[in-house]
Length: 545
Image (tube, rainbow, N blue to C red):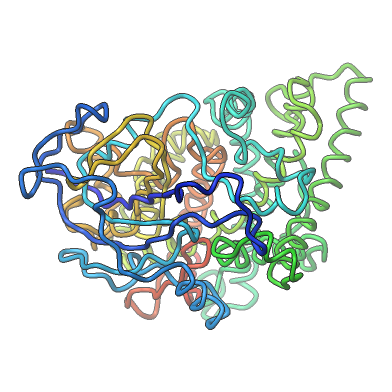
C-alpha cells in the first residue's frame, strides 16, 4: 500500500468563550494540546460523512476526535522554548527522525492553539476532498496591526469566492500554457546571461590552463541574484542589472528584506499578535519593516510599468504580444484592467517576495546533487545537448525534449522540500489512522518524511531523476499525491510555472557550459526557518567544457 505521512492539526475551540476577552491577546485562547504520534492506516477506505465513517480500526472501532492523545505540554511550554532560544526551533519530522519507526514527538512548527497527530494515509484523502474554493490558513498579525495594509489584498490571504475570482484571473497570466510560452524567452535570456557571467568569472579567477579552468566557489549569492533578476524580468518586464560587477544597493536591500521576512515569520506563528503590538516587540518591528521595504521596491517598478503601459498605449502598440513586445505579468494585468491597481500591486509583490529564496535554495541543492552524482550528471547533460540541438534555440522545445531536467527538479524538491508542509481543510469528515477527523480541520502533509519514506518511494535516499518518468508510464492506484512541493489543486503555488521553468532553464545552460563536482559527497546538513535550506551553502567546482 502506497502511503504518505501527514500531520493533522486540530484546532479545538474552548466552549463558552464567545465574546470573552483576554487582557493581553484580546480573546480567550483556544484549548491547546500538542502531540504527534505515528502509525499506519489499517484500511485505506475513508468515510464521506460523519455518519458514514468506517467502523474498523486497530481495536475494531473508529476513535473519536477528542481521543487523540497529547504530550501534556501546553503552548506556554513551546512559547518558552522559542523565547529561550530566540529563534524558531526546527521541526522534528525533518531532522533525525527514524522514518521506518516513527515515534511520538512534540511538533514545534505550528501556531499555538493546536493538537497534532502524524499518520500514514494512502492517497492523502484531504486532497481528494478539496473544493474549488479551498480554504487557506491565514495568520492574523496584519489584521491586528494594520487592517488596510497592502499585503491583506494579496490573493493568498483571501478565502471564498473573492479569492477564487482573483486567482482565476492570475492563473491566466502565470499558470496557463499560453502564459508560459510568453515568458519562457525572458527566463531563457536571464539563464544565458548568468552562464556568460559565470564563464567569465571561471576564466578570470579559476585555475588550470586557459580554456579548461576550474573554479570552486559558493554559488549561493549568485543564485539569489539570478532568481531576483529572472523574477523581475518575467513579472515587471524589465531587467535590473544584477549580473553587473556592481549590482544596485536597492536590489541587494530587497534580497535582505526577503531573507529578513522569512527569518522573522516562524516565531510570529507562536506569539499572539496583539501582545506583540502592545509591547512593541522588535521581532514584529523587523518583520513589518521587511515587508514595507518589499512593497516599496515593488511600488517603484509598478509605477514604471504603468508609465510604460500608458506610453505604449498612446502609440497603439500591442502590449503583451509575443516576442519583444511582451511586457511581463504586470503589463498583462494592467492592460486587461480586470483587477484593481491595489490588487495588482499586492499580488505582484507577493510573487516577487515568494520567488527568490524558494528558487535559489533548491538550485543550491540541485548543483550539489548533480556534482556528487557524476554519472547521472552526464546522462542529464547528454539528453540536454541532444534536445538543445534539435530545438533550434526554442527554450520550450528544449525543455520538452529533456524530461530528466524536470525529473531533477522534482527529485530535489522530494529530498529537500522548500516548504516542509502543505495544508488543507477537508470539506467532508474523514478517518485518519482510525481517528474521526471532522470537516474543516486543518490537515498538513509533511513533505520531508514523505519524500524519504521507503513506504512511499523505492530507494528513497537515492537521487534518481528518472524515477518520475517511470512513474508517469506506470501511473495507477497508489501513485497519486506524492509530488506536493508546490501544493495541489486550486490553492497550489501561483508562481509554480515560473519557478519550475526558471530552475530547469538555468540547469540546462549550466550543464551545457560546465562540468560540476564537489569535494565531499557527505549529505548536506539542513536547517528550517520558514523554508528548508542548507546549514552551510555547498561549495561547487565548475569546470568549463
